[in-house]
Structure formats: C-alpha cells, structure tokens
Amino acid sequence: MSDDPVALLLLPRLKVQNANAISGPLSWGFPALSAFTGYVHALSRRLPDALNMDITLDSVGIVCNEFEPQIAGGYLKSFRLTRNPNDENGEAPALVEEGRTHFEVSLLIGVRGKDVLRDDSELAPLARRILTHAQGQRLAGGSILPTPNDFLREPALQLLPEAPEDMDAFYRKLRRRLLPGFALVQRDDKLQERLHELRQAASESTPLDALLDLCALHWDCDAFHRDEQARQIAWKIRPRRGWLVPIPIGYAAISPLYEAGTVQNARDKTAPFRFVESVYSLGEWISPHRIDDPRRLLWYHRADREQGLYRCINNYVEAQNS
Image 1 (spheres, rainbow, N blue to C red):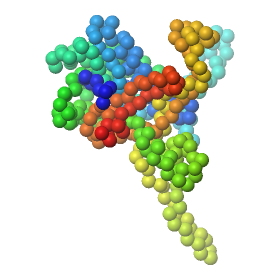
Image 2 (cartoon, rainbow, N blue to C red; image 1 turned 120 degrees about the horizontal axis):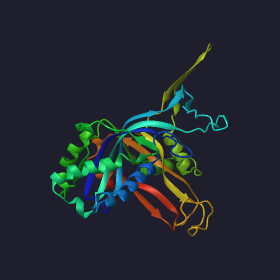
Image 3 (cartoon, rainbow, N blue to C red; image 1 turned 180 degrees about the vertical axis):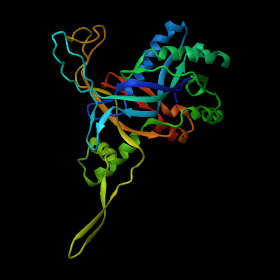
Image 4 (cartoon, rainbow, N blue to C red; image 1 turned 180 degrees about the horizontal axis):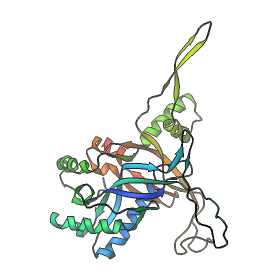
C-alpha cells in the first residue's frame, strides 16, 4: 500500500470522559471517525514545533476497549442531561440535548518523518513525550483523564519491519496490548453486496436501503401452526453478518466552493468555504487478533475538491484481497 507509514505509535487505553456520543444526524453511540482523524491531525501539527523534530502523524487505527454511554431508560433510551446553574438574572437556562459517553480507546497511529528512523532505545522516550502532548488535547469533545504508570498504559513507538515475512511476528506482540477490544474497519464491500441482492428483488433499492437492512434487527417467522383453537407462530432473529454498524465517514458538498472570506459568519476567514452534509458507510467491529497486519486497521483523510467529497477511508478490504 502506498500510504504505509514507517513506524506505528501505540497510545493504549486512553480514558476519555464526556465525549460526544452523537456521531451524525442519523446515528448515535461511538464518536465519529472524523473526531479521531482530526485528533491525530491536530497532534501532528503540534509535534514538530513542540519536539523540534521532523515527524508526521497521518493515520489512526481505533480499538475500543470499554464503552459507557450516558443514557437512561429501558427499551426506549434517552441521554442523561446536565442542569446548568442559573444565569445572572436568576433564570434557568434552556436544556439543550447533548449525548455524552465515557470510553476507553487504544489508538494505533501511523508515523512518518526522518527523525523517526532512530535506534530502539531512543524511541521509547519519544513515545512518552508524544503521549504527554496527546493527553493535553480533547478527543471527540471529551477530556482525556490521567492514567497510571503501568505496562498496560505505556506508549510504544516501533519501526515497521521491512520484510513482509516479519510482519506477523511484529504484530503478534503488538496486538496483545490491544486486547480485549474491538477495532473499527470499513466494509463497503458488504454494503455493495447487499445492495446487489436487494436490487434483484426490487430494482429501485438504494444504498440507504441496504445500509438500514444490514444494521437493523430482523425477526423472521420460523414456523406457523394453526388449529381449531388457536394459531401458534414461532419467531427467530435473522443471523447477522458480523458486528455491522452505520458510520459517518465524512462530508459531501452541497454547494460550490466559495472563496475565503466571502461567506458571512464562517469560522475561518482565510480558508475556502462550502456547505456539506454527512456521508454514511458501513463499518464492522472486529477483534484485532483476527488480522495479521496492523496497517489494515488504519484510517486516512482523503479530500477530493472536484467531486466535493471529504471523507475517511480504510484499506481493510483492499489489503484483505491483495
């Protein structure tokens, strides 16, 4: 793969409190992918000046170790909202619904740069310095809590082996620190496969129909018996094709690209501006021990101004088929 980094940085078991649980206009739960790629991008912009080094972070693998959404209720759930103090006039402010979650995540970050190609004895102190800066940033709007100094939470920076046959042994040691947990990968192949099946029965089926069909919980009639006194129906849950979830992966343009400073109330007056809407795809949570190459977990930023598409991509399927 042309986007391969030269080294991998492991930030294990980061505890995040009160992160944003509303990942998109149609879904809630685990934070959006752009929150993690944006977190790594912000850290990458900060490190060269802070460390006075040639170093770039350009991709991230996401392994969720714990997840605790702040919700209440039974079948119908609602977010736990905070009550803010009264304002200076003694009036209670309006309640604005916001979704919050606590979670623990391990990040596997792709690293580039000349200063990364060092001796192994110099990489461990460098990983600790990067972790110090990483803990000072917010992740998905949440605060990263201080973590105890133990082996499970010790950061690691390791060079990728040059020989393909050494990758299995390299990752075998690394993935022990990712478990127990589940990694998020992109499964556009399953989405296209299901869309093709739906169009065999209904030609007007859309990708949204396929996405909802794969992520919904289906109850099918397993047996039907009818006699003179009553009728009996047996139901069963349709088997799932893995732990599939809808994920917002970026944005698509719905307007032309305006010149910098021409749109009123834009956040950045020095950058071009355009209106966008969320783009959804299909993701799958898999155990890290089910793959043999850590590069298949990495997510990258991709921007196509001509098509107006700004999204996150993952090479899990391409690497699986190669």
